[in-house]
Image 1 (tube, one colour):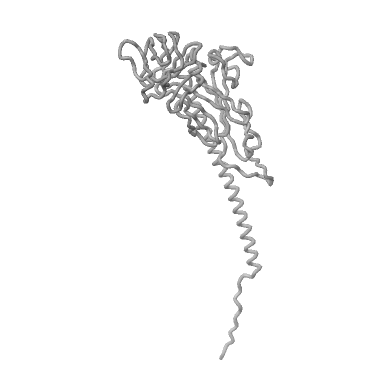
Image 2: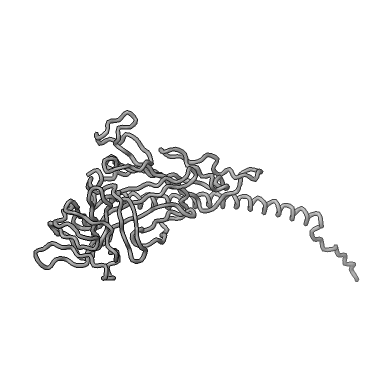
Length: 349
């Protein structure tokens, strides 16, 4: 007996079902990517904030360490503020003001320059008097006492009414005469100018030992980096930290301003005016520093408009507001402000 076998056609997804599935998948992908974008935004913000925190903290720490050493070796009211004539065979003639801290104000939308000067001798000795007057600018220095001075040390000579000069000791006296030789023909000692110091000193002169490698560091901001130039040794810039966009500095002075009393050891006011003489330099008790660190990457506008709104108000510090408008896209970044007040302790002492 034959049986009739009936079959039903195999059923699959209809085009409508496929389209619905694709639509649901697309919606799911959109949601996933939106969540991922938001998550990446949070991660980028946290990461950039961490970078700014690290760069700013490191920069401020380094500046603080430098300022605390400022003035070591010449913290004497006689020498501070004098015009120094120096020389380095790798650079040529140099001229600078002898001061623990020297601020060069920048434009309103730019950064200041901060110069820090100090010696590095292990033994701080008082300045010694010249025992014998010089006849010309190449004469060696005959002093009353050569204690603590070593071959290779840089010595600064000061006399009232004259420029200070810098020379390097090439040999010490072998006999009883305390003569400090600065022979310019010895190329291993690059700080002696062949034509002489340029100043002839009398027995009213005083000599300061600054050690074998005194520091003259000049800090500034260039290309969104905090940089430093070791101005006694090389004109080249060295990067301290990235994404530092502005540096502002002020002297804190015990000058009787703002109703204060001059000479009482209390800071009366802050400004960027360079002291005019040794008396005014001695009124500088502290330096106030403010710097701005920036996130590494810009962020997109949060709304539909083209203008960035990551930062809408310029950051500020105790000295006022930071003007970041030199960069037209400054509002696309996040910023952190670092501020401190550092005593110029060697100047105080």
